[in-house]
Amino acid sequence: MRILITNDDGIAAPGLAVLHDIAHAVAGPGGDVWTVAPAFEQSGVGHCISYTKPVLAQKRDARTFAVEGSPADTVLAAGHFMDVPPDLVLSGINSGNNSAENTVYSGTIGAAMEASLAGIPAIALSQFYGPRNTGLDDRFEASRQWGERAVRACLAAGFARAEGYALFYNVNFPPVPSAEVQGLKATPQGYRGDHAFQATPMDAPNRRTYLCLHGKDQQRPTAPGTDAMENLNGWVSITPMRCDLTARDQMAGLDAVIKAL
Image 1: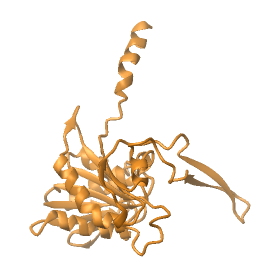
Image 2: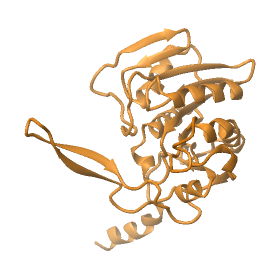
Image 3: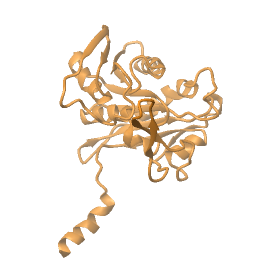
Image 4: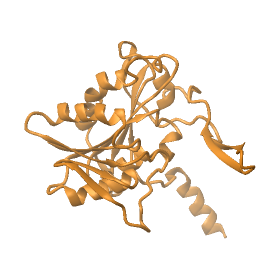
């Protein structure tokens, strides 16, 4: 198997090194792993692509490239560098969770989305942090131990299309030591409540005001059975996703309103 790995934390991020090991385990002795990742951190850029400007790409070795662009850019760039398209794209392992509404902002998810739009199976992987794992010598302990199993579960479940859109998976490892992980669980995306992020002013010494953007408490649970709640309960969440944003439950009502005008 030929696997492409990328992330949004940058090519030097420790989570990418963990993912590299997982990718090699999944690819097997006859497979190979390519790395095309952002040269610098790109957290929070979502599915952004550098549509209005060129991006610089630098070769690190035969299968490793750093791209001065977004995670989605790296997937597009890999199509240029790789003589044969990958069989699988793995994005992560993100430093911090991409559960609940974080999914919408995530560059880790953005890379998986871009791969799925290219018809390439893709999985985004993120490590949740909390009081029970931030003090560990290895904060990626849970993802290191459970990553291969999570990827193989997604591969076994498949990447079915619906209305043309390919499936991709969002995996989040819980904020606990690996010994406390309960297992794998299929979950829908949760919601922590409105106003996921907010801006707080900061007065600088030059008397100018800057705004710092930050999210809400990441330990806040979501509804029972959804991703963040199950992560906080010690489960590795696996959420199947597609790029189709249509609110299908609203179609009939909208159609009725339009016809009544």
